Length: 341
Image 1 (cartoon, one colour):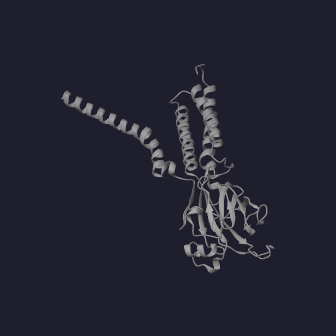
Image 2 (tube, one colour):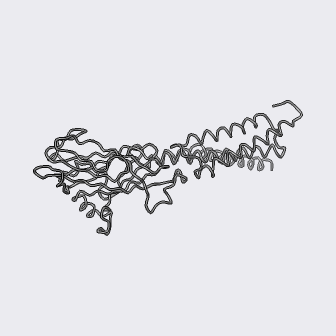
Image 3 (cartoon, rainbow, N blue to C red):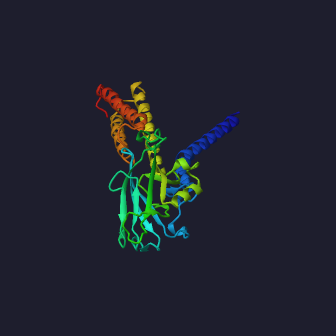
């Protein structure tokens, strides 16, 4: 009989050890390993923070060798302000060799002047480059209006907010004999996008045939886009969303605040119901939780303003739990009859 009971105890202990091992593997191996696994599934280091999601994709000017007598526009997103909802771009007009002498980072026009118009809110919208002049970069700010998608375009939704820029540009050339700048006419163009990232954001471009949308049934169709580019008309959408890294660290910080608040509540409940003594260690723990919550809020990527959804869902409740716990534990500790800490 004792042998049977001993075997049953051994079997129960074995099952308990296996259960503890499974919990340990789950908590310390599988859950942390999910982050690098997602990173690798998402193409790892080959993933980019800038993408072009249309029928043309992320092509270069060299990929369109058939384009001659063209003035292409290369767009580079420099920064994005989610509170002001404005984006800063650098635009590089890039004539083909028939129209300019091109170098690695610059171009000098030959005979014919060109004119570029950019739908921006700062600086000159019309830029004219004279014959035999250097074609320089255009720096322009854009209003990111997110037309039709205003619900998601709110930084209070951080880190799941998203914004859409819908902008326009056109290019003309004066190939008249006297170059009097009164005879500008349409010239073939195309829009290309740099893949340099904006810290904290993923930028997704999508070319459109939206310049004259009343004449195009599908503004995303390849034929409509090419037709408008042949007349020097450019329109595209740029969607700004928080990067995967920003979303990941924000979620981890939010979960940490919740777990910290629950742990502190558990400790305080044990002290309040006299199951644990009100020690100095518990008091230090509660005070450190308050300071830690404030520090965690300060390290959120992008420095979002006070009042976002995460504040009301995670930080403010965690901060309040820490303050209440500190008050209760301090009151109970002061009323102790001994001097033990």
